[in-house]
Image 1: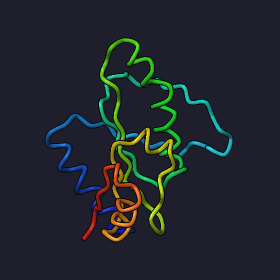
Image 2: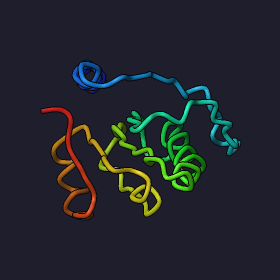
Image 3: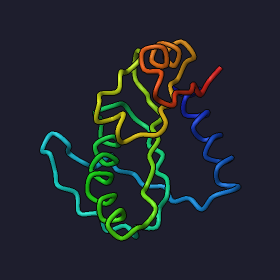
Length: 131
């Protein structure tokens, strides 16, 4: 966990040099209740990078945002928000069809995890973060 956290922090430091970034903590969500999220975020973000497991709180938040906000942007002719997910948790998590529609990037903690998923799903953008 410490190595993974260090890799995320290093990646964020590099990104911060070139992009305006805002960090949000969505771990207070109770996703088992299936909340309908009221996004009071300016629709100016072009890319969201989440950190957590598939079907976790961050994934829930990003899928909800994509489902609710991107259709509004498309209707107005605006650039759609794009999404990436730094996956954490044991073993290679397989993205379901909806996840493959939402995310443009999956980052796995090990090369083995990334290779397994990339081999199974050659049409998605998969990388590994450590090692």
